[in-house]
Every structure is written in C-alpha cells, then in structure tokens.
Picture 1 (cartoon, rainbow, N blue to C red):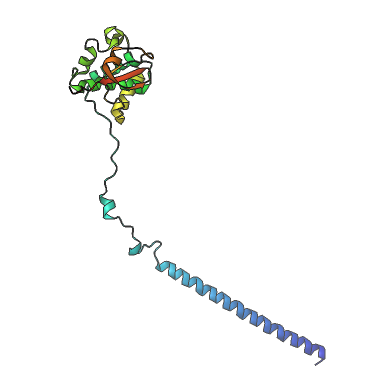
Picture 2: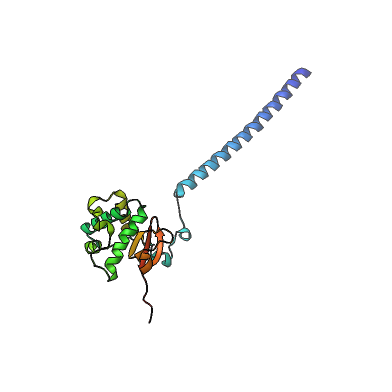
Length: 208
C-alpha cells in the first residue's frame, strides 16, 4: 500500500468518526427536545385552562354587603295638581318674563311659600287672586300671557331637583332705585335681590 493510499484511508476514518459523533449529538438533542415537548403537553392536559385557589377567591366584607347605597337626589313635591301648576307658571310668565329660569322659579316659590305660611290663602288660585297681591293679576297681564318653555323649566327646577333659594320669601317687587321708598321697603324685611326683583319677608315682631 502506497503512502498516498494510507493517508486517504486515515482521512476517511477521521471523517467517519466525526460524522458519527455529530450524528450522536443531533440524535441526543432531538430526543431531549421531544421529551420536553411531551412533558409540557402532559402538564397542559392535566391542568385546567383557568384555576383559582380558595385563598384567591374574592370576598365581600359584611360591612360592604350591608352598607346602603347613596339615595338618589329627590325633587320637591309641591302638592299641586295640573291646574295649580299651570296657574303658578302663568304667574311666573306675567311677573318675570324677562328674568332667568331661577328668577321665574323664585316667583313660583313665593306663591308656594304663601300657601304654606298661614297668613295667606292656602290655595294657588286664592294666593294670586288676593286683592293687591300681584299687580300683573289686577292689571290683566296674567290673562294676556301664556307660560313659555322657560316657565315650565322653572317649575321643573323646583320639583325635579328640590331647588329653593327663596329663603322663605313671601313678597317681591321690582328693585327700587337707590333711595326710593316703597311700601315693601318700609314695611318688610329685605332678603335678597335676584335679577330685577327684590325679595322680602315680614319683619319679626319686637317684644314690647
């Protein structure tokens, strides 16, 4: 055998050994990968898709379960029927057409306050028709107007939200000029001014 043939045979043997070693390594890696995948599949099959331990269960405290929820805001029942509501909003139109919604609501509340005061008639019709009570009733303006949407909105403001900033007012008039003397300013206690109206109540009686 020549030297060249011996070298060729040795190279062939070394190549075979290397290929055998590489094959064994690849086989081992493939087997390990298959084993890991099989174990993972078995674990996923054994476990439910979602689990919650007892310690993780949400709880509701007795205080939270029995604590009352906040009551919705209630309006104010004036105790009026449809006819009385119409009379009141019509008077608001007659007396406060140029005022804002709250200004109209204040006129309605003055009527309501009078019916509950014990010093005036206890009905809406009785209050507005009382002699010299409302100028717009005595001069015919009340009969000439019809309540607009804002007058009804003023009534809703009171009945649906309970709004009442009248401070118990029983009277109102167009705000006098500075220094002007009126029956209201001389005989009543001024409460506040809203828009073009000044609102009053009766003066407290002084002890003798």
